[in-house]
Image: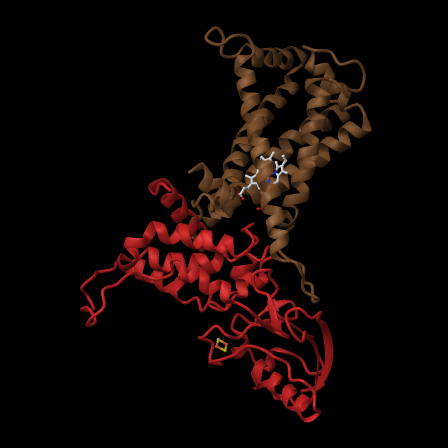
Length: 248
Length: 223
Ligand code: HEM
Ligand code: FES
């Protein structure tokens, strides 16, 4: 496959950026999108140019490190992560636009790499449970009804990649935050912090400068893990419940 | 709790949802009232008069009407100010867009802000036209609303402004009703269909019900 790439290049956070055009040839349809970028980078390095910086780690769709807005879609045209996106999803001779996540709370570090530490701070504000340490408890010591376990698991699938923020016209982190809140709030293990968790995580989310939710639904469409849009309504319900219960 | 609501994006959206639903409830009642125009001047004017006497003798003349007006002004102001705050925040949260643009979200969703501005301007014009009579075409007659309505809808601009606003309202309600359900935490996967259907039905009934009046005057059904 021969492709024309238009890639966002930005030397560092303060420098202005622009789209740069590259031609890549000899791309196999079985390559992942990241392997295609590796091929481009090899050529750039051989030519003595600066390689394109992009985030990646596991390359098996579980870590949430990879990003990229590809032809206007977060993680590209398939419902998966960029590392799991294959070049067979594109046509020979196609022009592909590659841009970083765009949000005030995710500033560009270099080229396609953005700083997602705002998500870490949201997690720090309440995305944990307080559990006594020691030997692992018996598997059935704390019974969890099956529907609750399913609900928790569905939300636990969130890998924190930030595609929801990148896709949202308001740069909102509501889907991410709702996935984390719902995952823990439905479980008995998460019950002690049930109210403070949702209040603190929503407050942290606002603090980071993410936008609000207008229910456009772009986040759920972009999510590689299929976190559904109603998660946001479920978190809103938890938030309203907590505001009624907690006086602060 | 008031501060928690006002200071949070989630809370401010709750204020928008509640004030929006208050306005929506009012509009359903308002639309039904308007349709009385099809039963002639006598019944329509009598209904308008009753709006001033409702609640009597427990309440003084026009008190009930003023309570409704105060509630509505509060709803419009809270809704508008929250919309402004949240929109400003949303725009700041996405300072640079994508070079590769895609058509995004449904039309009703994308037009909430402009639709809201149209509605706000319409509300001002509408009150100056048919409540105070300040900008009314042809002598405004207090206590003769039937004739006033006919006068307004006998001008091309009266019809245009009104119909555009009502179409904007339909779109606003279509997204707004469903959206409010999500904001208030009532939405979930199983209820999604019924909520969307209700939103569509409400939008359709309100649009048709409100548009019926100018259309009837234009076609001479009501004169
Ligand atoms: C004063 C003029 C108005 C303005 C400036 C305005 C503006 C807005 C905006 C910007 C939104 C948020 C849209 C979004 O989240 O995507 C909204 C939502 C909404 N509006 Fe309005 N609007 C106005 C009048 C009305 C009226 C007359 C109604 C009554 C039917 C109404 C009902 C709603 C509802 C139910 C929502 C949904 C709230 C939520 O998402 O939780 N609005 N409005
Ligand atoms: S690199 Fe780990 S999810 Fe893509």
